Picture (tube, rainbow, N blue to C red):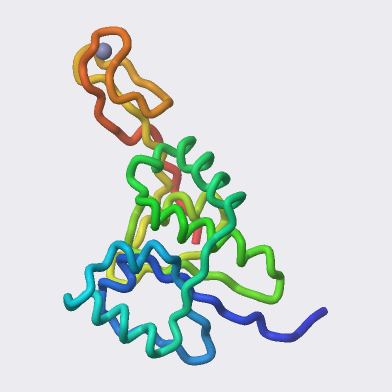
Length: 177
Ligand SMILES: [Zn+2]
């Protein structure tokens, strides 16, 4: 068996960068995606946290289109797609790309429940920064505010009565840690 320790790769999402919490970067590689620099406006405190991490070795990597498509498909099924920003999708897709490298251990640092939810479904490891983290796996569904019919797909307007739908949790599954 290969006893060589896997190289740890931390992928930081926007919430991890904005937390401003010190992140132990010893012997770890930290990466994020190009979307982060678009979400953060230059000049503010958030941008300074980002710049600080860049100076400490945070690198920016783009995920493959193939992985982006995969994340979009999965998050549509779980219902998280409407809660994920383009950057969130990039973060998960990048994790999916790096996970293929058997010499690397990928951990997504995020406080975002939808990212955690999709990461769980995809068997991507994650750690939270400040929130306790999810202990249940959610599946979201759309329910019509008018007639109450539930839809598996993300339907904004009910085709039966024309009322708007809202997103509700349809099932919970306890995650064993
Ligand atoms: Zn309806």
